[in-house]
Length: 249
Ligand SMILES: NC(=O)c1ccc[n+]([C@@H]2O[C@H](COP(=O)([O-])OP(=O)(O)OC[C@H]3O[C@@H](n4cnc5c(N)ncnc54)[C@H](OP(=O)(O)O)[C@@H]3O)[C@@H](O)[C@H]2O)c1
Image 1 (cartoon, protein in one colour):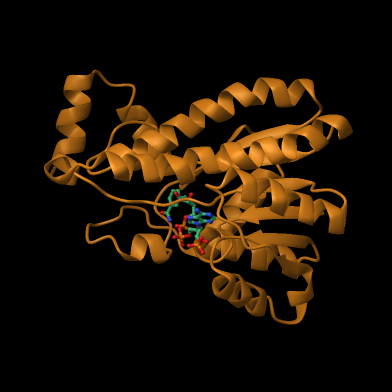
Image 2 (cartoon, protein in one colour):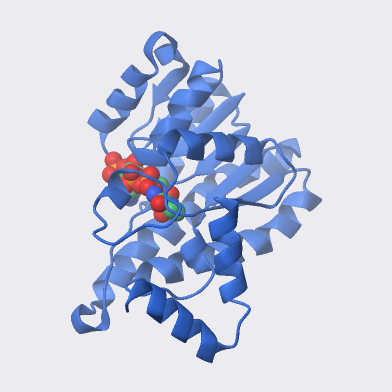
């Protein structure tokens, strides 16, 4: 299979790239850092030839289209695009900056939209293809310090739900991935307790299992995801009380 993975220079995207390459798949790995992508490739060891790096800033519309064309010119088609590139910039009202919201939406939402525009035309022509959009359980409901990140991830869930109808009509598969806390360089910066923290290898396994299923949503760890879904079904008065107490917000 041909996979295009964005955000492949570290964390979840890097682990998925390595694991899929080791299984014999061809991986087109994108992120801004060429050095990081080279590191991912090297970590695939004897399977590193299965990873071809395509450096890219997904927030640039023009660059995304150019990189997509470069992949297609070389490899003809992409079977599955895992749109995983994302940033997390925590922010409270006391230090609120609209520019942080813009930066987050530019990468997390528009970055994915740029990739979807690039790939969807060919997938529609082929009436085949698979797009997996990486959101987060943080998109289920507002969490402290997450106004920018949470808004981007909530937006992505709705974005994916909407596109799922069109994808199905065109013989394509479209899924949304909502991980809980996964141990990556992004979460290593957190100075608060992260319940049900998942090791990166396990996260990659869960995502691969989900990609091979027909489920729309790939969410893990199951218990954490269900707890958050349940909290979001409660009346707001209870939601704010329980989340506030647990997170000491
Ligand atoms: N870790 C978690 O607990 C967790 C939970 C839920 C959801 N997620 C989501 O999972 C995805 C991966 O997160 P992670 O934890 O693996 O984080 P990470 O280790 O920080 O990796 C993020 C990746 O995104 C890339 N990236 C950032 N901005 C980019 C841009 N403008 N263009 C292209 N690539 C860009 C980074 O590479 P460069 O800096 O080289 O560009 C890096 O490869 C994110 O979407 C994140 O929101 C993570």
